[in-house]
Length: 299
Image: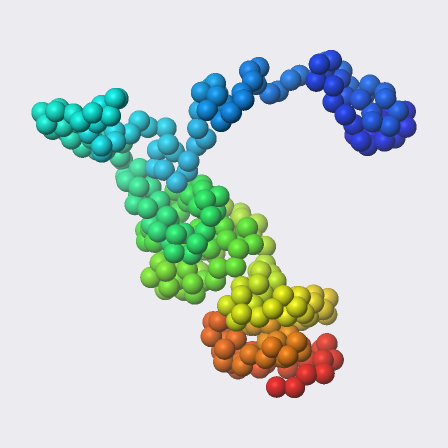
């Protein structure tokens, strides 16, 4: 939006009058604007929570999305006192039938198992809450599309986690996910390709830059080495040396060359162990980068 008088793009909002005003010339660009915020004030977090009426957001990591009432396990009344043993037995039966009623069909039973497995895999990989929620949402889309029929729950969960990590630019490889989920890498890759095709997912190519900081930290290298490795990768991308090659091998070779150039040399075996590739791969990528970028380094 531009000011019709002076062409300025910076505006201020007058909440009392409901007007949007140009900061440069003072012209009123829009008026009678709606106030989209709440009609009440809050001075602390408790007041905000007590006055808000929209409720908690949906949690896709819960089989019922967090919309079902839960009966806790504490056996205490509203004042914190213990409940009589006769009432405890009644509460136990209520919990049991409540749990049975909340899982009434095969889809809900599948979600209960799959989301538990998803939480386990995400915890082992150190993924954040937003990644888990995005993975749970993608798994629900697979259920709606009927992609889970005839396939292992664990393989679909692993493929979903891998796809979301690729979308969010998180450096997690198929080998890591396969090791945590205890599912063959081929099976995860096959399921991943099916999901991306059926759901028309736009998954970007893995950028080797995502792995640089991880390798540098594991090898205990300095920030200057990390900057040098990123600089080498940028030059390699400009020359088209990345296409058709594994991102882990290219990133590992860049870190190895940078460690030599900054006098913090690490052996090829050390870098290979951290990156999860072979020493032969690092040597091949090293020779390609050295020849294409005209680097004056020696092993």
